[in-house]
Length: 203
Image 1 (spheres, rainbow, N blue to C red):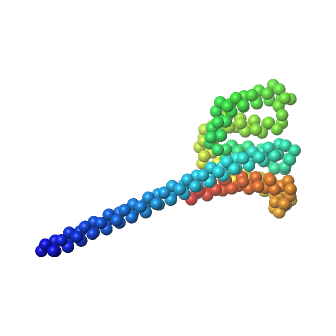
Image 2: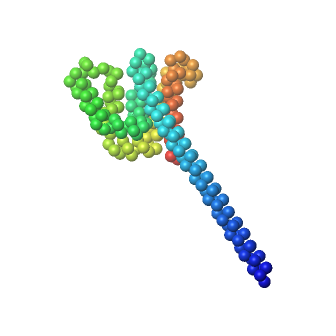
Image 3: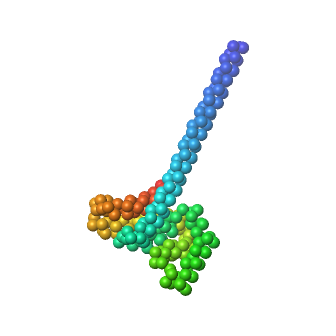
């Protein structure tokens, strides 16, 4: 009788130990999955942020390029709404505050009262700052941070890419001409960010 009780107690202890080991294994597996998912989300967030900065820098580069002696046939005024919708939040918030308001005020004052002293190449940058300052919150924060802003950026980038290829004399020339390669690389950077953003908004 005592032996039977001993065997039953031993079996019960073994079952308890097995349950504890099973629970520990499940906990370890869940922890590993959580760490993996957090790492993936962090990687995606970093990738989106990196592409956003790259797209904004590329748009500003193309804007500067077109306002200097290396003029192109692209409609670079479209880069203004692209920069507006793709500009990183920390930069957008900085220019939408008092600093941007002072710049807009000075630019408008010079443009109104001293038009001859206002250089042509400053018109588009001043217009961008003014757009950032006066944009209502629905556009500045709600639409800009949603997939709508990414779609607008994608449409602009596709149109600029089409115009660039047409001005270069074909797709091949856009990658082989000496002055066209830098523009092509910049426009490709404009395309990657909205495609990436829209993809992860959908999936």
